[in-house]
Length: 229
Image (cartoon, rainbow, N blue to C red; front, top):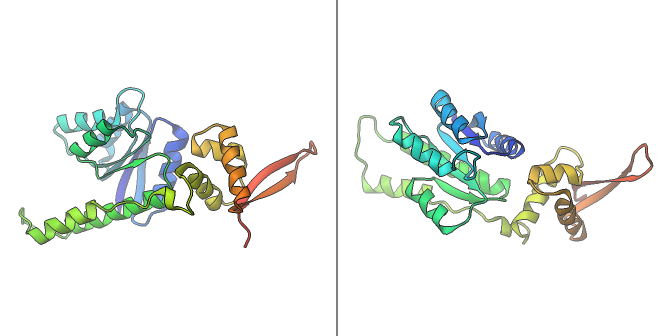
C-alpha cells in the first residue's frame, strides 16, 4: 500500500484530493496538511511514500518544503506537484528537485489517477530490484525512466472540453446525487457564478441534465446530474 500525504492550503481542495487518491487502487491517504510547517512535521511523523504537493502555501512554497526536507538529512519522500503554478521556472525547479510529475490545476480525476498508477508501477519496479544489489543494468534503468515519464491524458481531450469545463463535468458525473452550483463551486475552488456558467454550458452541450426541484419557498432549485441515456 502506497501511503500519501496531501498538502494544500485550501482545506476543501485538500480533502477533495484526498478522496480522489483514496479511490485509486493501492493507495491510502495518511494525512492532510495546509501549511509548509505542518507538512514538514507530518512527513517526519508519518513517513509517507508520496506527497501530493501544492506550490502555494501560506508560510513557504512547496518547493521550499522539498529543499528543507532534503537539508534535514532525513529521507525525503517522493512528491507529485499539483498546483496552479505554470511558470517555466517553477516547472524547471520541480524537475531539478526530483518531482515525479507536475499536474497543473485544474485537472481531471483521470489525469491524477494515471499519474498515480504510473507512480505505483515505477515504485513496484524499483521494489523488484534484486536484494543486496546497488547497481542496475541498462534495461532496468530504461524501464524505470519510461515508467516515470508516462505523459498524462490532458483534460482538454475529455469530450473536447477545455480543462475547467471538463473538471465540472467530472464533478457532476461522479457525484452520488444531483449537485447545485454552490457545491460545484466549492469543489472547483471557484465562484458560484463561474460554476453556474460552466454548468449551463454543459447542459447546452447536452452533456449533463438540469433538474428543477421546488423547495418550501416555491422557487425552483437548479440541480445537475449526469446525462440520462
